[in-house]
Amino acid sequence: MQGFIETHRLDPDKEDVSKRLRHFEEIYRFYTSRLVANQSERCVQCGDPFCTTIGCPLNNAIPQWLEAIAEGDIEKAFLLSNETSPFPEILGRVCPHNRLCEGACTLDDGYGAITIGPIEASITDLAFKAGLRLPFPGITTDKKVAVVGSGPAGMSCAHFLLRAGIKVDMFERAELPGGLLTYGIPGFKLEKETIRRRFAILKQAGMTLHLGVEIGHDKQIEELQNHYDAVFLGLGATNGKRAAIEGEDHEHVYMAMDFLTNVQRRLYGQSWMERFSVLGKRVVVIGGGDTAMDCVRTAVREGAESVTCLYRRDETNMPGSRKEYLNAVEEGVIFLFQAAPVKFDIDEKKRLVGVDAIRTELGEPDADGRRRVTDIAGSEHCVPADVVIMALGFDMEGLPFVADAGVKLGKWGEVEIDPESGRTSHPDVFAGGDCQRGADLVVTAAADGRRAATAIMQQLLG
Ligand SMILES: Cc1cc2nc3c(=O)[nH]c(=O)nc-3n(C[C@H](O)[C@H](O)[C@H](O)COP(=O)(O)OP(=O)(O)OC[C@H]3O[C@@H](n4cnc5c(N)ncnc54)[C@H](O)[C@@H]3O)c2cc1C
Ligand code: SF4
Image 1 (spheres, rainbow, N blue to C red):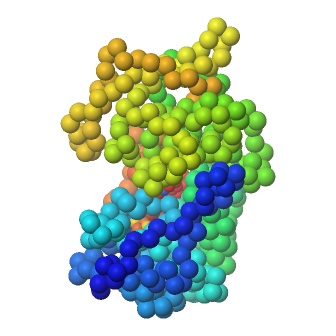
Image 2: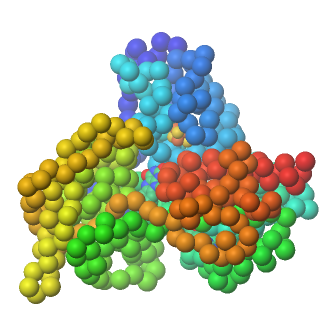
Image 3: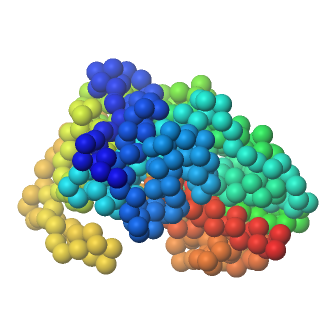
C-alpha cells in the first residue's frame, strides 16, 4: 500500500526519435511481467476508486486488476480486465489517460498517477503472449443480431453479444474492419496487430464478418430488420469540418481523413493516391486535437520539409491527449498557439503559398468549460505553406437510409437514442459511438456498444 513512496511512476520506454521517424510502428515498449507488477504495486487501493467511478467511461475494475497483477496473477488480471472491456490492450494504448482514469487517480496530485493505461495494455499483451484465451461459449441461443459498422462501437457490441451466445453478423463497407482504429489512428499510436487479433477472436467466437457491404446501398436496414432479431448501428462520423474561408478548395488543402487514410492504405498495400504526398513540402496542420496530432506526426514521417501546427487556443486548452502533443514536440513539430486561419494565400500561378493567420486572445470559459476565443484586430500574418491539412473535427455523414428505415435522427443528423439502452426510435434498432454522440473517443464508443449489447440481451433473452 506504500509502494508509491518507494516506486516512482515509470512510463513505458519510447523508441528514440531518430529511429522512430523512419517508420510507422508503435513507439512504446510496454512493460515486462516484472515492471507491470512493480508499477501496479503503487496503487493505494482507495475505498472509493475515482479511476473506476469517475475516470473510466467503462467503469473498469481498475484496482482489482492492479492488485491481481501486482500479486503476479496474470490470468486473474487478464480475465478481470477483459470482463468489462471489449479490447483493453487497445484502450490502454489510445485513451487520453490524463483526462480519464489517470486524471482521476488519487496519486495524480503530487506522486504521479498510476500508469493505468500502459498497465492495462501490458496485462492483455502479456496474457496473449503466454497463450491465455478469452472464454466465449459459442453460439448457444437461436438469436441473431446484425451489427453495422466494424469500428470500436460495433466491435464492442459484437463482443458482448457473442459472450452471451448470440450469433452476430457484422457488415462493413470498407476493405478491412476496425473503422478509425484501422484507417484513422496511425500505427505509431496503435499497433495494427492488436486490431487483427481482436477480429480473429470475434470470428472464432462465432461472428461472421461481411466486408465491402454498404448498408443503405448494397442492402437496406429493412432487410436486416426482417432477417435479424435486432440491429446495431455503429456507423461513425467522419465528415471533416470545413473552416469556410477563402482558398479552402485549393487542391493542396487536404482534409485530415483523406490524408491519413491515404497513407494508411499505402501501408496496407491497398490503392492510394500520389497527390496527397507531402514529401519535401512545408506542411501546416490546422487544429489541436488527436486528429491534428496524428496528421503532424504522419507528415513528419512522410518526409515533409517542415510541419507546423496552428491552433487557436493555447497549450493547456488543447482538446487531445497531452502525451501525443509531447510526442509531436519531440518529433520536431512547430506549434503556433493562439493563431487562427483567416485565408489561404494563393499566388498568381495558383500555387498555395501560405496561410493568413490572426492572433487570438482567450476569454472566460464557455458552457463546455473551454475558454472563448477572440481575434486580435490587426495581428494578421502569413505562415508559409505548400500543403495545409484541415483537422477541425468531424460532422455526421448524412444518414438518409437510416431515416428511411423509420429511425429518428436529431438536429445534427445524429441517430437519436434512449440514453439508458441505446435503443433508437425503432424498437429493434440500437445505435452508439460517433454516429450517435458526434466525434468522440474509442472508449466512449466501446461503452456505447456494451450498453446496446446489454439492452439487446435483455430484450432477446429476458
Ligand atoms: C485521426 C483520428 C485519430 C483519433 N485518435 C483517437 C485517440 O487517440 N483516442 C481515442 O480515444 N479516440 C481517437 N479518435 C476518435 C475515435 O477513433 C472514434 O471516436 C471512434 O473510432 C468511433 O468509433 P465508431 O465505432 O463510432 O466509428 P468508426 O470508428 O468511425 O467506425 C464506423 C465504421 O462504420 C462503417 N460504416 C459506416 N457507414 C456504413 C454503412 N452504411 N454500411 C457499412 N459500414 C458502414 C465505417 O466504414 C467504419 O468502419 C480518433 C479519430 C480520428 C479520426
Ligand atoms: S478504458 Fe481508458 S479510461 Fe478506462 S481504464 Fe482503460 S485507459 Fe483508463
